[in-house]
View 1 (spheres, rainbow, N blue to C red):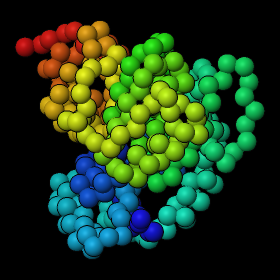
View 2 (cartoon, one colour):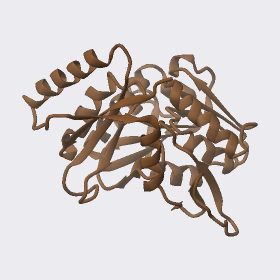
View 3 (cartoon, rainbow, N blue to C red):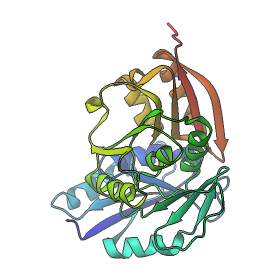
View 4 (cartoon, rainbow, N blue to C red):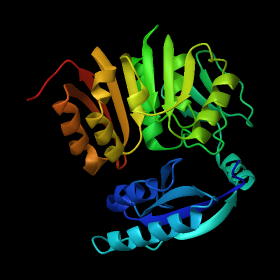
Length: 296
C-alpha cells in the first residue's frame, strides 16, 4: 500500500496539454488528469497533473520526467514541472472539499458519498467516492460521455468501459439499463476504487470490474466507451478496439482535444467505424462512431 504520492503539475497552453500528458503517462501508471486553469477551459493555461507512487522508482522517474519535458520544451513552450508530496489521506480530503452534487444531462445526478442529497422523481443517482482514481464527473469529457450514454443505452445492452477509473461511466451504464457491463483498467488502485463504487451503487450484479488491457478483453459489445487520451485511443484502434464493437454497435470516445480529433477519426475509419456525431465542450471533443463501415 502506497502511503504517499508525488504530485507532478505542469501548467501549459491547451495545444501542448496532450503532449505533456503523454510524457507523464509513461511514468504515472494510474493516469493523468488535465484541469482547467482559473480562467476556465476556453481561456488561459490548463494544468496537467499526474501522481507517482513513492516507490523505489520514484527518483529515477522524476528525473526522466524532467528530462523529457525539457526536450519537449525545445519544440514548444512548456513550463518546468513542480512537485509536491501528497499523502493519500490529504489527497482524498482535497477532493472532498471540491466535489459537490452535480447534475449531468436530463436525469443523471453524481452524488459524492459524503454529500447529502434527496432524489427527485426520475433522478438516476450515482454515489461516488473517487479515492485515488480519476473520474469525478467534473471534467467536460466525462460529462459528455455521461450524456451520450444517457441517450444511447437501451435495456439489456452489453457495454465495455475501457479505462474505467472510478467506475463512473460503467455505473451510469448499469443504472441506465444496460444488461451487462465490463469495466477494465490497468491500474490496481482504479480497479479497487471502481469495485467499491460499484458496490455502494448496488450494481455488482451488472458490472464486472477487472484489471487488464484491451488484449485481455474478448468478445464484442453493443456499446464501447473509452475516455482516455487521443494517443491511447489511436493505439487501441491498432490493437483491435473496433473489433470489440458489434455490427451496428456504438463507440463513444472522449478525452480528446479538439485539434486531435481528426487523427482519432482517421484511425476509426481505417478500421470500419463511421463517425456519426462529434460533440464539443470547450477544447474537448467526444466522438460517436458506429460499426459497419469500411474505408480502404
